[in-house]
Length: 352
Ligand SMILES: O=C[C@H](O)[C@H](O)COP(=O)(O)O
Ligand SMILES: C=C(OP(=O)(O)O)C(=O)O
Image (cartoon, rainbow, N blue to C red; front, side, top):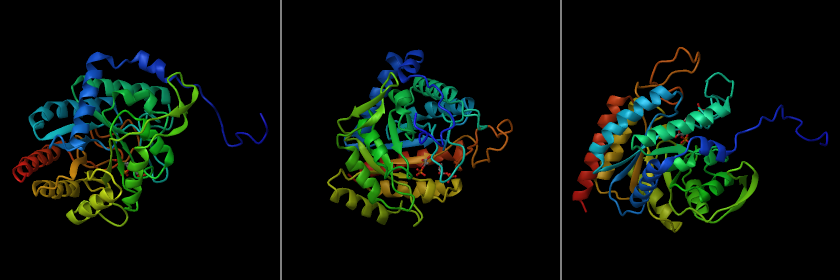
């Protein structure tokens, strides 16, 4: 190889082929049926054929199996009582986009100690998705590394592209071939247009480089994904969950010839990553829904068992059930917020 090649690459490590992991941990007929059913439900909410609210709720990041499954059991037990009003999807985020550097998620570093046992991370992530699906609970996740979907996307019912990658052609191309509905966050600066552009781009067919189920480098050809939407998450310019910002965003979406629909993320820059403020933001979103705003088809909530967040530090000394990335609402507050959102949907129905 020429001396000018890989001058900053330290190592190449072999990676299990996607097909081998899927064979080792198959989705199976029952979970396949759940994923297909929930994807169709999400699509009906997006298309306005189902007047419920799509609620993507769960921890900012999943960092250990036990607390993730504890949360999933709680949500799986609660969701049926809200199913007349809410289409509940659990946030199961394995990949964390960082502003600079930091822990990048369970797949990249499952032992939380910079050892980067990606094979264990991939296996752990897939096992978790299968176990959550087995509870009858659909899972939603952010797709960050363009290869990861080959290992887990068959078990995912809703996907997100984050604020830091919404403008990326790589992620728009990826989304055009994903089998799930996909939400695009607005930019970290608050720019909504990049997310609108992303929704339009993802709806088109694309040809790009990727890997196939055998793990071989491939030219991927997609048909386009019509089930994408914008997610308002605020930005450096401040929150954008208010009624005026929502109306403005819906106008921009409509002018782009796209379906006038959007999800609002009650966390991140809409609440300043303050879990206490997040509950208040969710209540403000609920008020808009109750007032009859049909353009709001969904809400994202960052929620875990214990409120707040903790520094990663010593991975053996963590508080159980508390986020190691962004601050999350605790379980008790989450149940109250979900109940408020359900009531808002009931009220909205009366306005139609
Ligand atoms: O959702 C998690 C964080 O908002 C995102 O990964 C950025 O976090 P950071 O600014 O601490 O890197
Ligand atoms: C990283 C996230 O959000 P954003 O991309 O909006 O910062 C997230 O939802 O976990």
